Image (cartoon, rainbow, N blue to C red; front, side):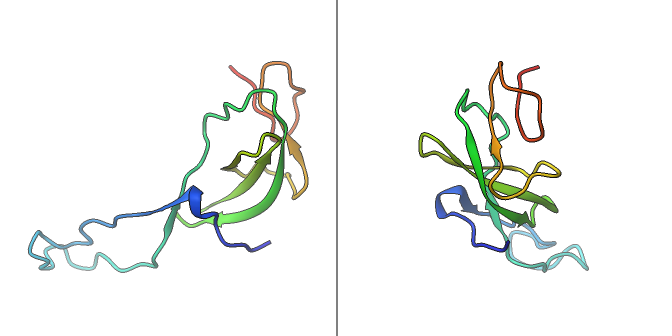
Length: 109
């Protein structure tokens, strides 16, 4: 399902250089170009403890060459996580110490 990224979960990405020096003159040939991309802020910590979240969208992240999921938590928080393989829209995920071991759930080490 294709959707636009959430505004509060993205930020502009500064592409420095692209093979040019401080004056803007090309010093490293054959570098640069590429498509304009927005950086998506991913929640790697998963520190929403014992609050269930629902997968709302699955999007492609061009910065990682991977898919990400938008999660709506029960307390109103919205975050991106890396897409767990096999998870579909509408699945429920939980992070915590006493959660069952299933696809998408996060437990501490």
